[in-house]
Image 1 (cartoon, helix red, strand yellow):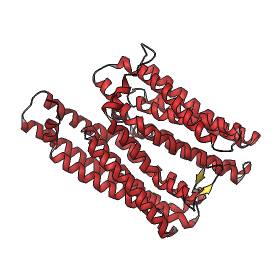
Image 2 (spheres, helix red, strand yellow):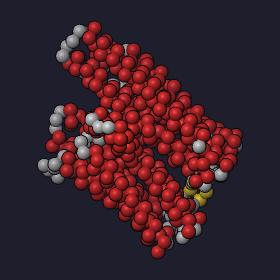
Image 3 (cartoon, one colour):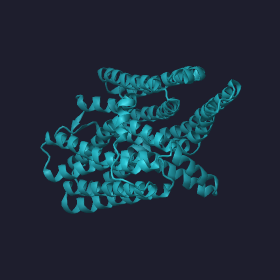
Image 4 (spheres, helix red, strand yellow):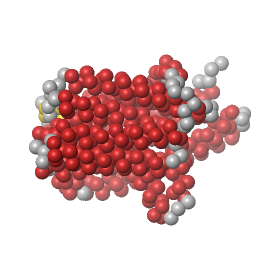
Length: 455
């Protein structure tokens, strides 16, 4: 997101305090748009639809959205990092003519692959066709939005992205309520899916407007899957780790069958979704200030290598990167500590609004702390990826996945009083490993940089 981060940083610096707040709001929507707005929309829809939808229908709808996000994020992880690397290389080489045809090619292939996957999964259910068709459209739209966001990180017109999400989710909310009240559950999900398809259409139009296509298709990016298989593994492992504890609870005896294999654990799932909102302010600051500041030092370090500067100058640039990293960690801690503390104090109010039983309020507080740790894990892995230390990131993501599975299974055996501790412990262990790996690699950065070059 560094490209669009520079545009947002300029907008924040050139305007008043109100303009700065508006800029950070835009950054929040752009950095976590689908996730942020979906949680808000689902919370509002849950309250507004209580008068015309049964509890079973509401649970089925929430389960459909939850599984849509889980499966689409895990599968998109297989391509997300690889395509990001390809896009970054094309921009660095100033080959912008290849971006639009690459985008079109990937969207077509990804839509077909995801459409086939969700069709097979839904075929195992007894859900009516009138529900499966909009559920399929919703899944494909959300999956494609994740892909579109990769390319949108390079655009300059950030307002159009914000407007696209705003328009799409307003339509999703209004259409779901109007159609659901008139025609029932199938029309309810149809209305929500219509808004997501509209969001996708607007985002696709923005990408094609930013990067004018000179040809229809370009499949050159496929070579990068052979060249960087570790990036595919990193994306899949990280996203799978984020959902591992939820999936384990779904298939356990504590999971609830919302209808034909769509299993959920509502209190735990809701706690996670709402708790994930606590990192939005930090993500906004990260997008505008922290990543852009680090990138400038990073660019200076590698420019010094290309220009054959002295070792002393390289070490000065390296010291600047380290100073930027440490100041970024401190800024993230200040922001995240304040937000997490406020949300923890407001737990009774928040949990009552989303109908989570009081017995699960401690789980929510643990989720808040765990998600706060995730922002540091995210920043650490991004820095390692900037330094092209893919093997190190793969180690961190593998630790995150394995510990989340192990600790969650352990908490299941210990009972409900320990639910949430698995994800919390896994997050802290993973952050610790990430920081240790980052500090170790950074100490040897000059050596690693030169020794990893081809002869």
